Amino acid sequence: GENVEQHPSTLSVQEGDSAVIKCTYSDSASNYFPWYKQELGKGPQLIIDIRSNVGEKKDQRIAVTLNKTAKHFSLHITETQPEDSAVYFCAASKGDIPTFGRGTSLIVHP
Amino acid sequence: GAGVSQSPSNKVTEKGKDVELRCDPISGHTALYWYRQSLGQGLEFLIYFQGNSAPDKSGLPSDRFSAERTGGSVSTLTIQRTQQEDSAVYLCASSPGGLISGANVLTFGAGSRLTVL
Image (cartoon, rainbow over all chains, first blue to last red; front, top):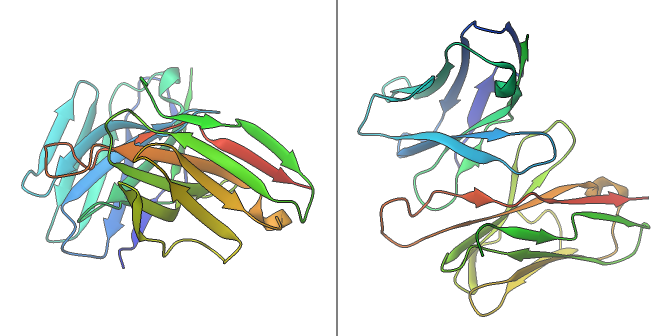
């Protein structure tokens, strides 16, 4: 089955800096790559996603890039703010059931 | 409803007792998922429903775990003879399913936190 590795497990940045979270996947047939943000006490919430026919997608301060050849994808957050502090999960899917990475705890210091 | 609703939000039980966790998905969503999140861990897949049938039960950790879905809507996850290692947050998610655009975009509930003493 699919295996998703996510790094780093913890990321600490200063407000205004950029943050990058990286994921690799094992199944070349995977074609859908969502990113979720989980705040304390809440369920994960979709923040951005990308499909395998697109190399990059942007939405305001967040962007996701996909390299199908290398089977890796990354989340980029620019101009980080304290409210970006949360756990971020990547996932990979080729059908109905996404496989999630282990999560990255992002801490943005004011 | 407007979102995925889970109950109870918190459950404390004694080892050996049975527990039931309920998930009410977004109206019209045909796909429903259960994941388990242990402290500091990722999202562990448990089971997936398409309508009332469960084509993939591969993630259920033991035969003490079972789930059902009735009327293509509400789902119940049952854990029998609970053990301390069952302590975790149990997350439910639903998605539109089918072949439409966004069919596999999951919306999660807030989770049910289970503590087994």
